[in-house]
Image 1 (cartoon, rainbow, N blue to C red):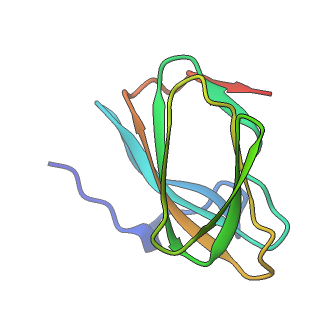
Image 2: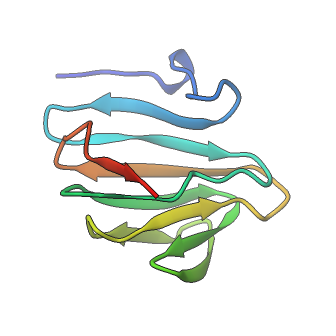
Image 3: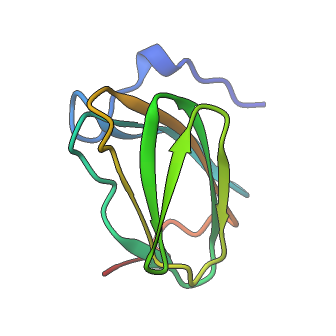
Length: 111
């Protein structure tokens, strides 16, 4: 059994970015907070599939060259080789849940 409390953990960039809630042994998952005009950063994975659930706010997904508007309740699942980025172009914070499977922490490839 594992237990985590989101408020006890920090975002990668301090006030925003990725916040892992659980890492391994089979999946990674956590939350992503993007402030206005922030991006996740374009990347893909060699083997890991990644799913995003928009929890709060709105943003734009950039997936393999396609722009897709997203808002609360939208879910996107990327295959490993799908190049993807998320842009908060909404003017308000956007919070997402992400799930990556399988657990391969060095699988990310920046573009």
